[in-house]
Amino acid sequence: DALSGLIPQSATALVGDYIGYVSENQSRGMLIAGLVAVLMSASAALRTVLKAMDEIYERPAQIGLGRLIFSFVFSLLF
Image 1 (cartoon, rainbow, N blue to C red):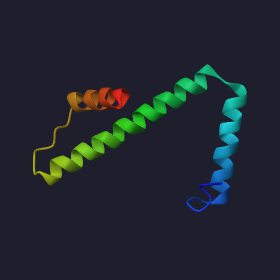
Image 2 (cartoon, rainbow, N blue to C red):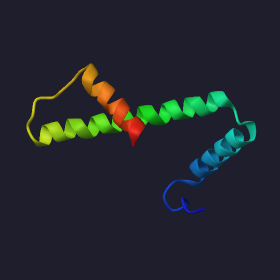
Image 3 (tube, rainbow, N blue to C red):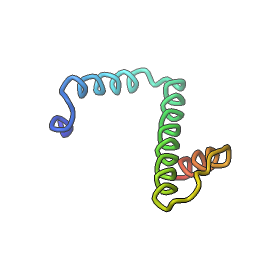
């Protein structure tokens, strides 16, 4: 109800149906998949912010495994 002004009604209904489905079935696999998706999304968002900060401060972009691991660990902690 609080989201009705922000997103379309069909999207609200879809999210509500999905949440209802997940809460009724309580599947461990869906929980793990959801947590992995949240972690990957947060990690990607952090890498985007770090890349923007590199561009703002005109630093050479740090691309590699170290940045990827840092973003996953930082996302997991916060």
